[in-house]
Length: 255
Image (cartoon, rainbow, N blue to C red; front, side, top):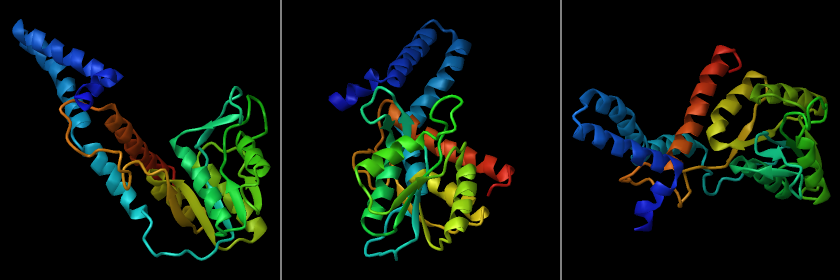
C-alpha cells in the first residue's frame, strides 16, 4: 500500500494526479479539444514515469563500465577525479557538501589508498568566491590532506568551466610530471564523453567509473508502476544531459 501511494507525495506525482483529474473533468463536460490538449502531456508523463524506459537507457549506458570480476589493474602514475561532486558550503563543518557525484572523490581516494597510484589529482572547479583566483576544489584538497587519506601527493586542476578545460589542464600537468599511465575517475554516465575529451586532448586514460545510478544498484526498481515516479525523470535528465553534452562537444570539436 505504501509503495502505491508514495508517488502522490512527490511533486511530480501530485501534479500528475491533478492533471489526470482535470482530463476526467473536461471529458465529463464534453470539452474534447481541451481534454486532448491536457491529456497529451498527462499521458506522456505517465509513459515516461511509469515505464522502465529511463532505467533501461541508463543501465545500458552504465553497463560497459561495470568492473569485471578478477580484473586487476596495474599501478598508474596518477588518479584524476573529475570535478562536479561537491559544492562549497560555508555553514557545513567541512566547508563543502557532496552529492551523488561525490562518489568520484571517494573512489579516487580509495584507488590511491590501495596503491593504484601515488598521486591524486582532483578535478577543476569554479572559483572559491566571486572574483577569487582560488578554486573551490582547494577546500576538498585541504580536507583530504588533513585526514591523510592518501600517502601520496594531492593536487587539483585549478579553475575549470567544463570537462574540456579539465582535460587541457591535466595534459599540461601530465607533461610537466612525465606521467605515462593515468586512471580517470568520473560518474559512469559521464565516462564515455570524458574519455573521448581526454583522448582528443592527447591524454590516454584508464576509466574507473563511480556513481552508478542503475547498474548494480539493487534499490532501483525497474518494474512498471501504475503512477509516474519522480526518480525516473531524474534518471532521464541525467541521461539526456550526457546525450546533449556529447552533441555539443562534437560540434565544438572537443571529441
